[in-house]
View 1: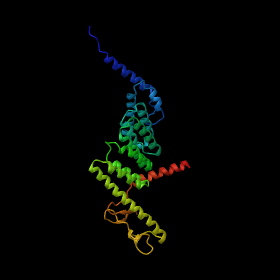
View 2: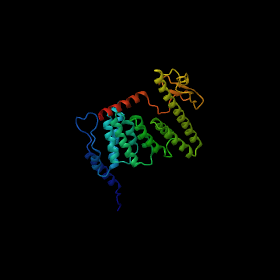
View 3: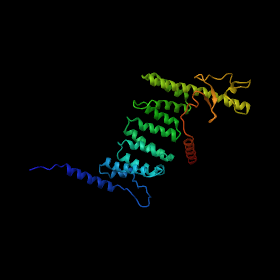
View 4: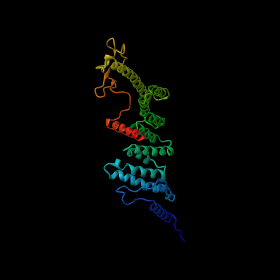
Length: 303
C-alpha cells in the first residue's frame, strides 16, 4: 500500500493558517479615503500566528502599491511610514524596506524622523550593512541640517570595506561645514596614513588640499569683515583686503594651487578660482530653503 506524502497537506495547512492570520489583522476602515487603515505594529505582530515574514510581505506590497499608483507619493508619507513601521516590526530582518522609508518619508520633519527611527531599527538588525547608516547620515545632513550628527553616522558607514571612498570625503566636508576644519584635517590625515591603496590616498590628499584652501578662505572672510567695519562698505575685489594703509592685511595668503582668490558672482563669497566654490556640502537652493523653513517651524513650536 502506497503512503501519501504529507507535503501537499502541510502546504494547504500553511496557506490556510496564513490567510486566517492576515484576515485577523485589521487592513481597512471606512471613511479613510484611498489609503489603507494600518494597525499598530505591536497589534499586527501579535496577530500573525507565527507567520511573520508572510504578513510583513503583505503590508510591504501595500506600501509599494501606494508609491506605484499615486502621482505624489510624498502626500501619502504618513501611511507609508505606518506601513513600513509594521513591515519592519513584524519582520525586522527584511532588507530593502528600511531604505524605502528613507527615500519616501521626506515631506516633513516628522516624516524624516520616522524614517530615521526605522533606519535605526535596520542598523540594529543589519549591523554589517553600511547602507542604512548612509541613509541615516544623509537624512541628518540634508533634511535636518545636523551636520555634526551626520558626520558621526557617516564616519561609521565609511569604515565598512564595501562603502565607497567618497563617503570619507563627505565626512570631512561635514566636519568642516560644522565649523571644525581641524577635525576634518585630522580625519583625512589618518585616512591617508592608514590607507594601503595609492589611488585612495591620492583622493584623500586632494580633500586635504581643499581643507587648507577653505582655511585660508575663512581667514579672508575675517579680513573682509574688518574691512567692512573700517570702510563702511564691502570689498569690490579680494585684492582690496591688502591695499592701502587701512587694509586689514599686509598681503593675501597664497591660493594653495597657484590660482587666484575671487568673489563668486552668484554667492558673493570669496572662493578659490581653482575650485570655484567653498569646501562644504552642496545643497540646492530649494532644498536649503525647505530645511531652513522646517528649522524655523521647530523653533517656533518649541518656543
